[in-house]
Image 1 (cartoon, rainbow, N blue to C red):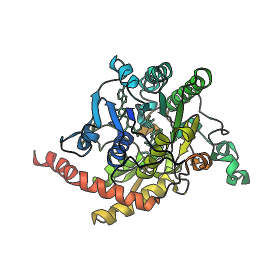
Image 2 (image 1 turned 180 degrees about the horizontal axis):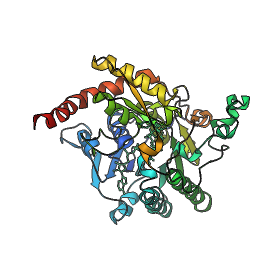
Image 3 (image 1 turned 90 degrees about the vertical axis):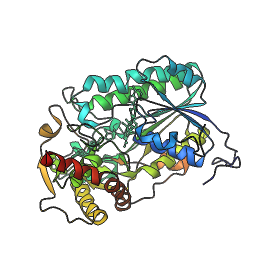
Image 4 (image 1 turned 45 degrees about the horizontal axis):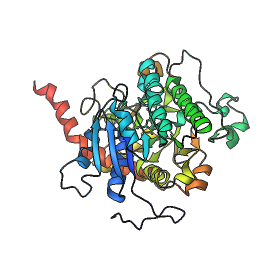
Length: 389
Ligand SMILES: NC(=O)c1ccc[n+]([C@@H]2O[C@H](COP(=O)([O-])OP(=O)(O)OC[C@H]3O[C@@H](n4cnc5c(N)ncnc54)[C@H](O)[C@@H]3O)[C@@H](O)[C@H]2O)c1
Ligand SMILES: O=c1ccn([C@@H]2O[C@H](COP(=O)(O)OP(=O)(O)O[C@H]3OC[C@](O)(CO)[C@H]3O)[C@@H](O)[C@H]2O)c(=O)[nH]1
């Protein structure tokens, strides 16, 4: 779609081109958000990250239709004095930068806490001091475990949505004990949310907080040994994709009984786009962004991915498609898990009229088609190499 000055917001007001400082623009969500802003709007993006592999296709060649509207700034926000200048010359800052892979939360808790709390502090401060709007990415993990998970297994109350539905302004945040270092991430995210909220209340910071519920799609994380470390453990979509590409059983942590709702990245990006262009409706709000209709256990996810991958690759599935592993074996000491995550969509629907559209089967079909096209050949070669030596 071509962008035009006639575009209007949800209240019929013309949308003026913005300059957006996007921190973490080189990651999974950032790459899709940059793509959306380049192809469908006239906004300019100052893309900040330490990596740019996932947005290279948007940065060059110079003949791209949006050339001049996206600039990459390779900087680490931990220690770079250029950050304040970039925030100052933007209308809006979107902060996506974080360590956000569960394998790191209990094994690198200090890096996790620094990344998700300490490193975000200057971003909040510069936005507040310079009267700049901030959209900050938090997580559904701030809810932790559901109230329902503490009820007896056979309690009929477990079926009552009041005991499991996660609502921005009423649900409690329930984390495990301190030695369960899994919660280092959720706790750091919760504290930065509280700080942003306090900056809004005391100093008038215009903010929106996003709580993503398992956004998945192409370019998520990495395939170990291909475009990431061989021993690295990415999030579940990439772990299972890697197993399917290598024709290995998918590993189900603690029986694969945890439940998740998965939303297609392209649906979720629509929601962020609406937040960017409708500040009067988005400011001061915390938004769940997920797809309550796409709930599965991790075991069901594994089964569905196996079927979809067979369809898109034309390969039969292996004889033993899944195996069970303990969380201690897979993630190490201090891992814990959220039992169930269903987002209440009332607030985002009321404020922005947003609803997710894509079914889990359809989103897996397009994502696994991408995974197969992008990685199958490289994985085959990496498997063949040691044999050839
Ligand atoms: N993908 C999801 O489903 C999901 C769910 C919950 C929360 N989130 C949150 O959304 C945000 C983006 O997630 P994502 O899935 O795109 O993750 P990602 O890891 O793909 O992207 C994060 C990006 O931030 C960059 N970054 C990290 N530290 C940096 C630093 N100090 N300086 C500069 N750049 C830095 C990384 O290089 C990376 O490119 C994170 O804050 C995450 O906690 C995502
Ligand atoms: O090979 C595997 C990998 C994972 N699991 C289990 O799948 C569940 C989901 O895991 P994952 O996608 O890695 O992450 P979480 O949903 O637990 O946490 C994320 O949610 C949002 C975010 O904040 C950022 O993305 C992050 O914290 C889980 O139960 C794993 O144990 C598996 O069985 N096999």
